Each structure stands twice: as structure tokens, then as C-alpha cells.
Amino acid sequence: MEDVDPTIAKQYIEKLTKKGVEATEAHDRAALAWQIIEEGMQIKKRKRKD
Image (cartoon, rainbow, N blue to C red; front, side, top):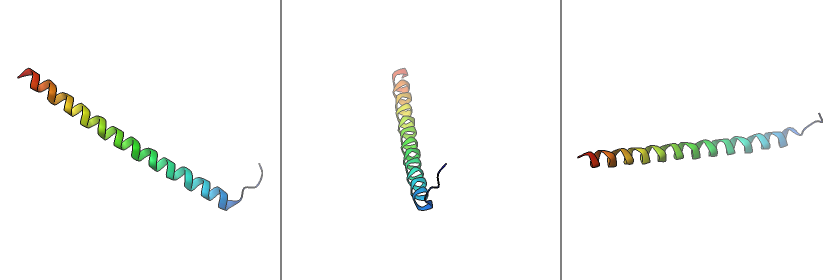
């Protein structure tokens, strides 16, 4: 393996970390949205039973 410039490696790691954080935030939002949709569907089901 050839020597890698530490500053380039650091920038690469920071870029990956930022992407990871963005992906995690997107996943959290998707999970929250899905939870809201499911709750909405349960409310509709309850209303039909009445």
C-alpha cells in the first residue's frame, strides 16, 4: 500500500462521516414519517368500527 497524504485521508473521512450523519438523519425522518402514517391508519380503522 502506498503512503496516503494525511490531510487527504482526513478530508475523505470527514466527507464519509458527514454523509453518514445525513443518511442517519434521513432514516430517522423516514421512520418518524412511517410512524405517523401508521398511527393515522389505526385511527381510520378505529373510526370505521364505530
